[in-house]
Length: 164
View (tube, rainbow, N blue to C red):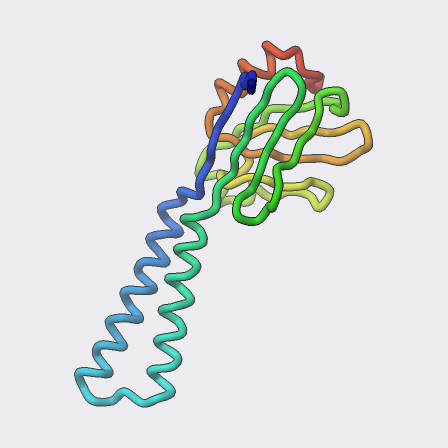
């Protein structure tokens, strides 16, 4: 039996990125159609446009498929970054030195506030919103979450070691 105190699945949902990708795909399809209609399509143009369209569609599909599953109970924090991670990562509370809730607004993610240090293991799809955990062996993990309010309530209920 899983006694989850907090559970969340986060997907990549940055509509601005998808808008740019969509405009790129539509622009490439438009120019490919224009060259076909005018009879100016060469093999080189066809290869470049087709490869570019396939690449942008693949990137869009990959961004739509990635997700971060986070679950927290009284024994551990468990997270998996699909399809990148093969198995779930676990941090047990007994190994946690301290943790800190972090929340930034959407605009901050475009201004560089989601920049992280190389010492952090970064697991987030929504900028710098989530839980920053430092383990007793000195490793830092940033685990992104959208529902910061529920995460905060869970951390408080579990009496997790928070930063002073």
